[in-house]
Each structure stands twice: as C-alpha cells, then as structure tokens.
Image (cartoon, rainbow, N blue to C red):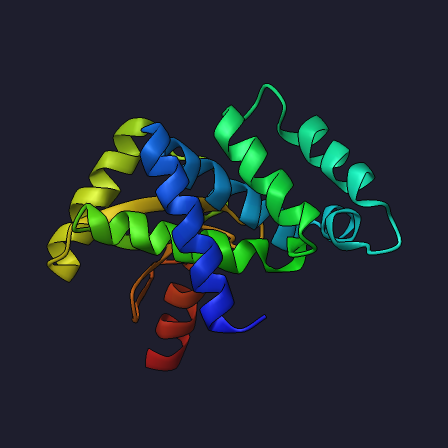
Length: 175
C-alpha cells in the first residue's frame, strides 16, 4: 500500500480516537497489536487471508481484542481488517503512534528488552533517554527474547545499544 494511503488511514484513525477522547489508549493498544502481528505469523495470516470471509476475519479481531482493548480500538482494527488492509496494520499503527507522539511534542522511543520493565524502571529509562537525546519520549517497550541482556533503544534515527552482546563485542575488539 502506498505511503499516502497508510498516512490517510492513520490520520483517520487518529481523528476518530481524538473525537472519542481516547487517543493515548488507542495508540498504545494499536502499537501493541502491531508488534503482535509482526511477531506472530499465524495471527498475521489469519488477519490477512483473503480466502477467509471478511466476517470471519473481523470475528477473529473481536475475539482477540474483546475485553482486552477499548471498543474504539476493536472497531478501528475490525474496519482495517474488513477493508482488506490487515497486512498494513503495523505500518498504520506506527504512523498513528508517531502522529500522537508529535501532537504531544514527543518522539517515539522503541525499547527492546528480554524482560518486562517495572514502572519505576520505565520512568528511569524515559528520563535517561530524554537526557541523552534532548527530546521528550513516548516509551514503547517491546519484549524481545533475542535480546539476551540489556536494552536496545531507538529514538528517531538514534540507536542506543546497551545489550550484553554488544558490550562483549566491544570488549573483544579492544582485546
């Protein structure tokens, strides 16, 4: 799908969430769902399989999100999947996240960690990234089992790699 179409869907979804007064909630839920779709091939196939009737794909969305996400998020995702745009949902969610962050004068900070972070750790991390980049950040934590220890943070074009693997590689090159 073209960038213009992705931007259009993201803009429309943002405006609906804004009109409903649930931008932050919808943005967080869509971002989480987008990462789940990217990492789960079976889910991605179920939401994008054109051989399945639209109603079946929308039922999958409602079963997946029902009770776990807001009604607005569920309806927006159901609409996207029903429109045959399920494959683009991660890109649409990313654009919506960037727009929501921009509207609140923040930058999206995607952080990959092998373990969940406590609220206190998230706050310290957010403060540290703000100090390091000079930008207020909208923290997005992604649990990634491939990160063996430490964190990888991406803020805009800046990547801060504090993983154990990177530190060992740096130590190895010094020796």
